[in-house]
Image (cartoon, one colour):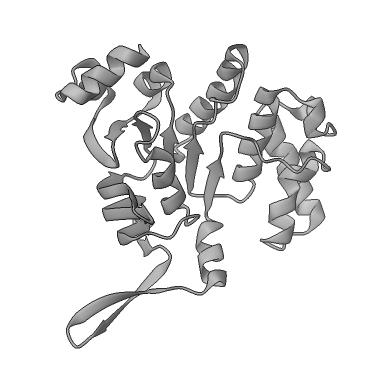
Length: 259
């Protein structure tokens, strides 16, 4: 399966009532690569991630992750192929293989950092507490928070909470990580510590789709940069192409504004 893209999105549409948020998105993310998605607010970036992670049902199109059609099965009858929604338990199983980190950290406030990281492997993967604890300790060390394992979220800075959230996502051993503006809620001086963890993940070969306004991170870490506007991909290519010499006027306008 190494020749199969980790993520393959074809003809993706998503509408909320009369509001058409995604308008025919096609995107391929190769295994072990980092795809950074840029664009103005309201361009559909976060909705794209939520569709990949099946937090939103798609309106039309197909999303494959690691070669598997997400959320649906295809049924052909009388020469026509239709999509049938999978059972919620199957959808949950698919989603469990994808890690997602949100703008807000969404940690359980009544649990320590260690317990936050342990919880999903115990409850979803049915791992023993001893196994989950050992893995959680490893992951907290990886994100530089060994000395904060017994602290509650209220005792942690925003950057520390976000690093716990990354460790929590990694605890499920995902093959794909999605980041939805993971530094946008942080004070500027805390952004670097989160980006450092993400750089380490990228260097380890984790496949990542990152929605962010951190142009420096995109330039340094991304294999592919995607620029979205009004629910469409306007431009995509290498960081050198999209950030250094964009071909589309809309991309140039956006970069001039954020830089």
